Image 1: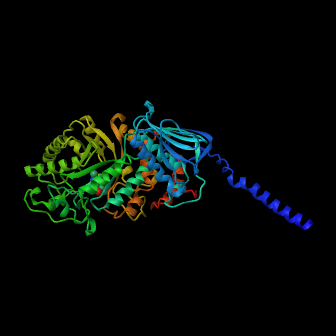
Image 2: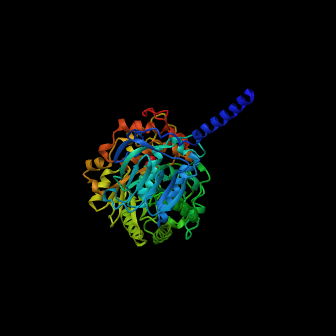
Image 3: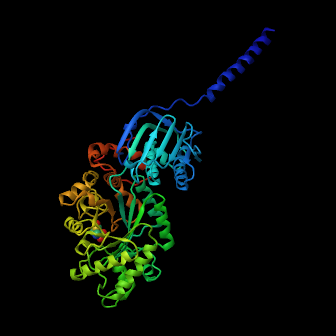
Length: 531
Ligand code: TNX
């Protein structure tokens, strides 16, 4: 009896214990660890940020709600889910709604009608129970999503499931850019980069809220875009590159794919066809573009300034008209870049009428001209933009003639320059550009020193010329970590940019760079943080 009793008791006890344990596995996960929004390493630094000392935690129940009736918001919801799901493994879904959702979810909404935020700004309100992202326009939602990436652990960037928890520090961010033009230029002519490589570069710059990718599509060493009316440009002009490699070109279909990929990330592609100099690849493809009618030999060296279109020939203008017609049709953005730099063998008396006429051709195709600062020697037609690279006095002359300016001063913004004397890749003609040198400058102050007012500065671009850079991993090494700095110069107000504070935030990007497999330069100027 006793024995029976005791075994029954034991059974009873075991059942009790099991029942008692049940609730343990059903208990909601403990509340998120309070995090401090003010300690998070967001680049570019937001305009304003208030921490509220708690956190939002992503769980199995989390979804992304988007305001109903807006396909672009739904696309952005899917984009956010695509960023969150691989590493969290949470299967976060996207749902439409007419009102703010209940607790536990993300909510993306437009129609903020908030003048301060402008076209690209956003407001992010993170509470323990919700993440609300609002903006006037979809671009702002995209930038708010980039901020959310920076607020999550770096492992969020990994392509396969990682350990959580996935928490976001609570508080409120109101943020908008100082300049509307924040970009980089990639030289796909000196060395050719594949569609996949260009897309990777777009992905990398978009994390830092850049909105322009200028593609240098032609130069002495290569012509990289299919032009149907002049097919030998791609066939012959695209057949090599610096060093004699096989080069390449984008078919118009591939180019459209790049443009769409960029547009989906709120990045405008600015196509550049450099002229009248830097044209050997075209001059090799069609003899009639030369004054003597003879095609030039393909060129695979790195000298500049030896080539020119025959600016007195009508065929040359017919050619330019055809090229820009086809390019305009592939370009949703307002700009076509005409180069215009280093035309050392084009007499100034020919250069000026040439640039005047090309501006008219571009205008006839409904686009605005952007050109390197030498174009300011010509007339500045309505809408023309001067890209300052070496000649501040040219930019000033352009402004006096009515042009606006994009700032790419070589001694600060050229990310093809070596970091220091030991950098294997890159050039050094504009000096070494360590990460601090590339960060500590202000476009408006630099322009003001030349007597140019801030109001005519559209923004900044960091050019990556590719004489020495042959593949995307080398592109990454030159761009990172200088691109985040240029992006911050374009976005964050000058009075909030301090190198001593920035370098700490940059140091904390280490884990993110590694999660994204970015081949970055581990500059000794930056206190790289383990976490
Ligand atoms: C100058 S910048 C050039 C390019 C070179 C670059 C190398 C500019 C408008 N012209 O042709 O690739 O230097 O840093």
